[in-house]
Length: 233
Image (cartoon, rainbow, N blue to C red; front, side):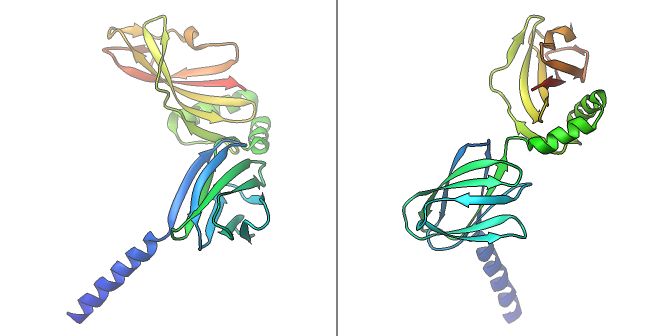
C-alpha cells in the first residue's frame, strides 16, 4: 500500500510541475507587433523557430536580460510591473516588436514563428536550382506535402470566400509557400453545378503565373480537387 501511494504521489507531482510552464506560440510577419503576458517574478524564455535571436532592445530599467548563446534564445525578467516593449532582431533578418505585460503567473515560454521567408536562403535555393527544375520540385513538394525549400515559409490561409470561375467552379486559396522570387500556392477547386465539368487550365493563368498542375482534369457530382500553382513574386 505504501509503495502504491508513493508512486501516485510522484506522478501527481510531475504532472503539477510540468503544468507550471506555459508555452505561448505566435506566427508573425516581419515588423509585426505581438502581445504577450509574462511572469512578473520569474524568467520568461523567448526563442524564434528555425532562427536565432541576434539582439533585443528596450528601455533600461524595464527588465533584466540573460542570453542563451548556445540556442540563440533569451530570458527576460521584468523589473517593474507595467507593460513594456521589446524590439527583436534575428540572425536571419526578421524583426518583431513584442509588447509584454507582467502579471502574477508562473514562468512562461514564448515561441515566435516567422511568417516571412528567410530571403537569403530562399534566394540561394532558387538561384542554385535550374529554373524549370526548381518549379517542378516546388509543385511536387506541395502536391505530396513532402518538401519545403530552404528559407521558404508555409502559410495556411484557408480563405473564407472562394473565387467563382466562369466555367461553373470556385477556387479557394488554402496554403502559400513564400520564397524570394517564387511563391507556391495550393488552391481547392470545387464544382458548383454538380455536373460533369472539364477544368479549363487557362482560367488559372495570370500575368505572373509560372506554372500550374492539377490533381484532376475533370470534376463530377459536386466534387473537388486541388490546383498547385507557382507565381513570380
